[in-house]
Length: 197
Image 1 (cartoon, rainbow, N blue to C red):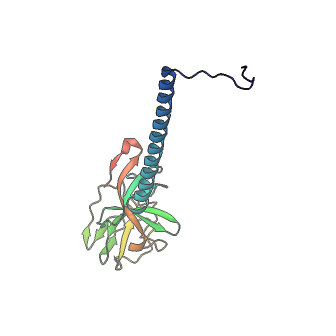
Image 2: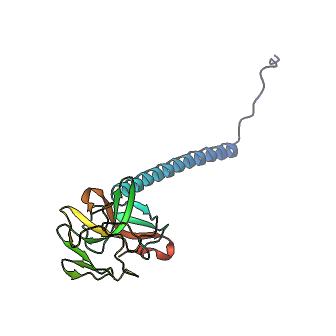
Image 3: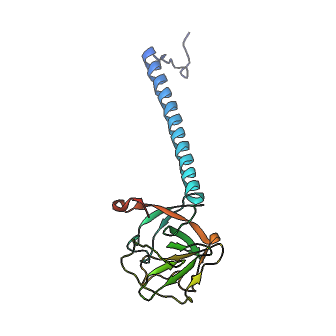
């Protein structure tokens, strides 16, 4: 009996062909699994990095020249939230919708005074400021000596002749609520990579 035209004979695959196809499918399945695992890991790491940078260690870029020579425009720094601030620490704080970086000079209840040459005195003692290149009284409209109010910090830029800071009523003393964190590390440029003081 003759077979109809629509029924065609098919060859069965060989063992080698089946083995090759099985290996190809296994590889494809493993590749997908590794790719999905890698993508999931990258998403989790990115989320953790964003969370850490937002909550504990904000990363900031420096604008302006008020902190030269310690920090230059374009430097990228890492700040640490919740730190205790001591005189000499670098502090980032909000002023309106901007973040400013200045140096903490005095804390709550301390007395700040300056002479015409720009020498700073805290509680009557001269402040040792090795980070300065030049001293200047700068823009100061405070009645000196000045006592820092409770829960506030007196902060000044390192470039004293141009920095607008706590010496002027436009900015005044920085409240604890304004503070973003203590600047602890410079990450850019690489030539300046390291801790800050």
